[in-house]
Picture (cartoon, rainbow, N blue to C red):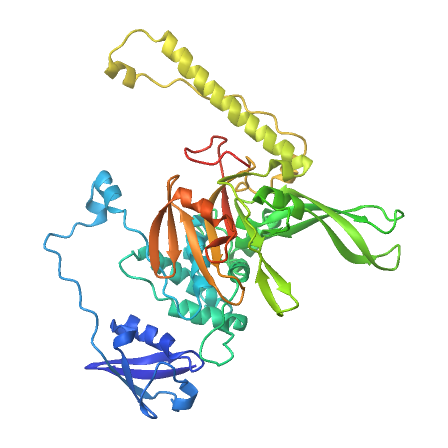
Length: 513
């Protein structure tokens, strides 16, 4: 990594970072953010051979630390000043503000096979707890170890301020991500570009990095783990780091030795941050894929046999996080081609996912008690409204509006035994039901190629599609086209669900599991 000086007309930009291992198009994207000169208009001079060509290698051009480069090219024309007086959002009436906020958010420019990264960021941006906790991260040291945290905070803030008229160019974040995790900086065989990467691996890498530094802040204090160490000593069971607090699933797994009846069954509590759904010729629905994935055969050392043995592993969910990440394992290794091939089989998924039957007995009892309470409150509210309407004397509309509302408080349902042992945090899913809000799709037939796109729910009838810098609205009915069956169209690779606080199904939602 070098720093150079850019001279553009009468302006001079010093200390501009130049990654000599990155393509020229990456550096042009940086210059675009500085000067607003579009990459296609840029002419960079001051190196061997005169002008820097798009397919050139920086190492061949002999660029040195502190070198002065000349930039030629005209910036994009600025928009004309508004004819009408600018009105700030803080001064607008509520109804006018709501009407004005219909512009779609901005997209992310593709900086060389970064669609896998762009799609992950767009879905993460729609997790409020994640964005809020990043904004409260205040580690004064700002070392290389938490560089990605700050880069993540900055890129999400920039996306929040963006709109569809201009995409965000994530140069700083991409460079920080590739520096922190060189696996994602792999180059193509000819060395002129970056290879395609896996969106789920990217998602998990970012989440793991954030989990090492950031906790989900449940108060107004800072969210960095170091500053909350005394608190965490008493909250260890609350899974306060970001990954476990938002996505941590606790499994209650029973291991049975399939080769010896002399060995007793072993029960373990294990943590994961996503559910992996393996696809077979019998897989047709997401729920069934999850159900099958909870039973598997594994190999581990047997103390009784004194060697490795086959075990039957049966798992139940013992803790439901506020967000549920589900991955379709769609890539399988083919020996004949020595590449991962894509499984195109269609697998449907619902808008509302009910996982109660996949939970442990204790967790099922806790969920049932909570849902019974919700039902009682709903019945009490309906009864109060009915009794109030029957008992009320004839009145004018104004008198009716001013009448005090009847009490809807219902007696709390008794919690089952050991309920506190099951429910780890106040943020857990207490109803056992999840609403689909985000999807990452893959288009193409191989893992080494293809294209990733993010889909984010806006309402019961509308979703937004984030295809790198392009953002578009689509009808909710089109989400069913993502079930699979064709490598030439988008297929769901990851589904993201958020907890439902009530038992009612919003209008337009699928009632299936």
